[in-house]
Image (tube, rainbow, N blue to C red; front, top):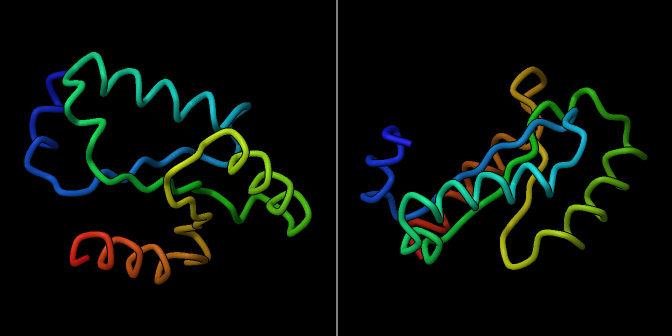
Length: 102
């Protein structure tokens, strides 16, 4: 948990969960719980959830996962990205920029 100290200065928190995990929403909630244990005040910061490795998904599975995750994780922007194919990377940068600069 020591590595969490630096995030207190950040204005936005980017959570990344791989698309090939068994339960994206559960993994996100685990990360939120760790954040809460470290400092509950950090839960008030703006958050984004990036689902990485989306190049492993076909369009149908990605659409299904989007629906499932949006139903389980409310109140934050969710984006599917792939560093391999660069899918969603520009959109993610734009979302971060807009979140930081209002």
